[in-house]
Image 1 (cartoon, rainbow, N blue to C red):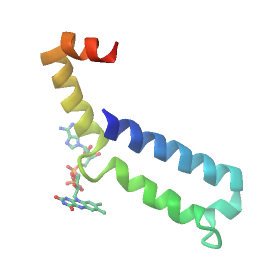
Image 2 (spheres, rainbow, N blue to C red):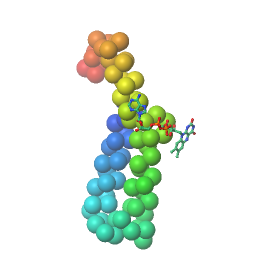
Image 3 (cartoon, rainbow, N blue to C red):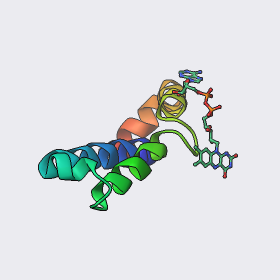
Image 4 (tube, rainbow, N blue to C red):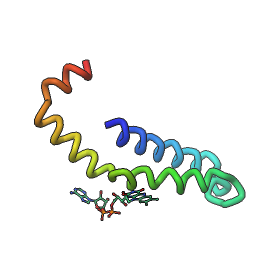
Length: 72
Ligand SMILES: Cc1cc2nc3c(=O)[nH]c(=O)nc-3n(C[C@H](O)[C@H](O)[C@H](O)COP(=O)(O)OP(=O)(O)OC[C@H]3O[C@@H](n4cnc5c(N)ncnc54)[C@H](O)[C@@H]3O)c2cc1C
């Protein structure tokens, strides 16, 4: 859950950073372009977001009540 949340949050933040800087955010003159590219891979390696969502869904189906208690 943490990996999916962190990877997707990072993607949104990096995307907004490019948007804020506009064309300059897309150019290699600034490090934003590199951060945007690097952010993208977190949704792929160490298990893609889709695979992790499947794992989480199976966990919820199997241990739903216990997970709901943990979430408060
Ligand atoms: C920079 C980088 C570093 C890496 N380092 C390592 C490493 O150190 N050790 C290591 O073992 N591997 C490493 N990998 C491999 C990485 O773990 C795999 O790329 C990743 O697991 C995805 O596998 P795949 O590329 O074969 O994509 P695929 O499995 O072909 O997936 C392609 C797409 O289909 C989706 N998909 C696949 N199966 C399902 C499904 N059942 N349900 C829903 N969607 C599905 C995926 O989510 C993805 O969007 C690295 C990859 C990169 C890019």
